Image 1 (cartoon, rainbow, N blue to C red):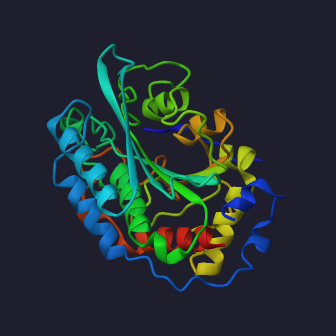
Image 2: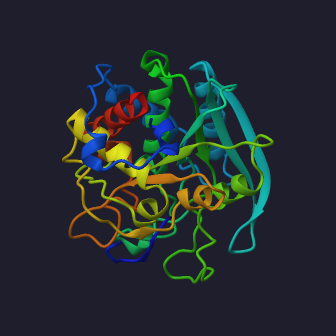
Length: 322
């Protein structure tokens, strides 16, 4: 999946994305949203995605879970659009890309994207047990957690009483990057293929969003969400709004005002087409990767933290209502 280009320290909602930038302290001066994000419900959505098996490209589990995601968002009252197209991967194999877009207030001109990837990595190449490196990853955290948070927001979105549109985008083919023992393209284009496809084949003619938020690995125990480097460079207002919302909602501990690394992730493809997007992605102190279950056979529902899901979900409720 995404990786650090270099481990270095980087030097409304959302309608305020169009206005002057706010400092994090200023963004925190908002009334606390009373609506409560239900982490138990989000956890259930993770279990449902994982119940089909690892959602690797071309697999039956991938097809069934895609049907579930599209059907669930539709049942929650969203207008669902599916974008499909064939993509050739770094190893020469071709898979159908299936991006799923679920829209709230689809006719609203002002729009915000909340996105995550939903596919599973085919190789657990970071597992401590080398015998498992050829096994697929269940991806409870690395994929399913972001989709689950979006589903829970969609379930309660009407109670936030927002007047702008939201597009929940589930990107496919994010985590098919070359395994650690093989060399992929130098430019990192073996990752985030689904969002790259979306950016060059927009699901709706003339589509544009004011800004976006990417969710990546938002359910890990002990996760902390620091400022991601490219987000600070290209979406500083969105970063300030989200981290300010976390402070207002009482989850500043999970969103420390500290620098993180520059990460190759789906948000870069949105930024490239003029949509300032902040990446909410986990960082772990003292670990060279994105947590103990990252790209391992241990990325399963039992290792998901409902406390982390709650922190992220409640922060987004607060940010969306500001």
